[in-house]
Length: 226
Ligand code: ADP
Ligand code: ADP
View 1 (tube, rainbow, N blue to C red):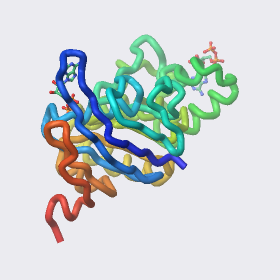
View 2 (view 1 turned 60 degrees about the vertical axis):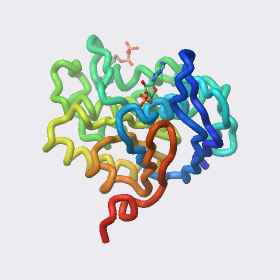
View 3 (view 1 turned 135 degrees about the vertical axis):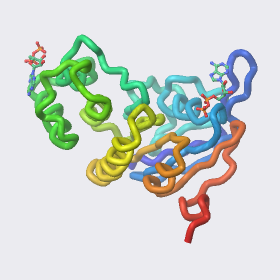
View 4 (view 1 turned 180 degrees about the vertical axis):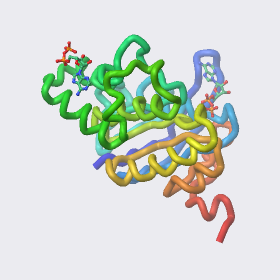
């Protein structure tokens, strides 16, 4: 089981700024949940606490049954996809996708199998020998997704992953991400300020404002359509 429980999570930055206030949420196993809200409302801070990249000031975070407040990022079974693809420019697509597995000392043959399987899911089998600069924006974003997928994490965190793509590609990737979610059967927590993404991709929407969870509901309720 890979649901998440956020129990009165707070983030107070060292400068005293209270960025996330008593964040309470149960995320179901295999849910595709969307965080929306104005810039600066605490979405990224919350994601970063879930990933373990930012310390939790108070409250408890459970992944499945496990309290993970003090668990290192690499041991949380979580993968993160950002808007700036953060690919290694000097490595091939294959090596970009393989990198995380190599670091975890996964046997070479298994790495090859996982990278090739992920490449197939994403339709980038023919790009494995290329370098990032030889790819289009959409292809790079697929590689970034591939790098997360190969690790087979229980939970994906995605912070505006499509915001650097042009409008047409965004529409296409939206549909692909929804399909990917069904294929992978994982939990996805997805941050966006794009209302269409929020309306069409998620099962539930969390509306944040000023570090507070204002509303949690399905897209129809939030955006008021029949
Ligand atoms: P969002 O992702 O919703 O745009 P963030 O989580 O990035 O918001 O930021 C929430 C608030 O916390 C913002 O007001 C931001 O300026 C502040 N903040 C982010 N990082 C730090 C930091 N390291 N120190 C102090 N304040 C920060
Ligand atoms: P190394 O430890 O030197 O990376 P590998 O045997 O894992 O050795 O692979 C050698 C190189 O061949 C890799 O670094 C990768 O760039 C490339 N490679 C391996 N499998 C594939 C593949 N299916 N498609 C494209 N490139 C591949």
